[in-house]
Length: 259
Image 1 (tube, one colour):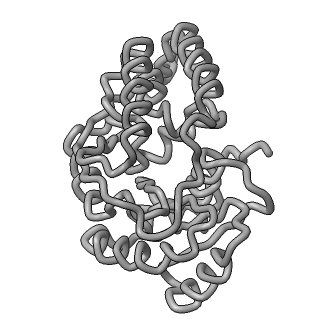
Image 2: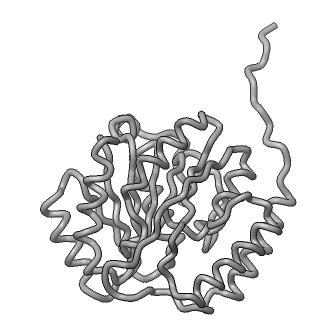
């Protein structure tokens, strides 16, 4: 759907009132919702006013009920959106960002491995870098994934870094803080969230990095297999490389002189 060129007055007022939108994509994470929402609320208190947007990507467990119960208890804080069927993590993030009312957006995974206590530090790093910085990217230390998954991630990050030269050690980390307006300039495709540093730089914005401590998921198990994204990831990498190679200078528009 084509977005309107101008926002309504009410939408603009809402956006001015909210400083930060925290977007959490989830699928079948019923047991992790309540503790993570409590952590986000406590961690982001200094960034008020903020909102938490959960995007349920077609869950088939008790996630919808858990979200409905929690929203009833926190109607002014928690917003819930739902995909009728699963469309993937990047689609869920995009749904949340499009609905976000904050100028800044923070994202994190819904399994508890990303600690929301690092959101304020990422927001501060982005602000300190100035208006030409578009993204503060978390980079995990103390990874809690299995050995095989860590080896796969290290290889994938190494190959991606050599090809895209995005100067980012860990693009797979879900903890990010970025300017909503910058995100809306990026080309949308599945797995966009894994290539944000390169694509933000493609648009002429700086990327800053901060280490974040990884931790085990709260409950349940991962929705991703070890090798289920290997070939798709190779195709995505080739596509992003092509986008960067085809980039041209973005024209700087200035007011025309009057005669």
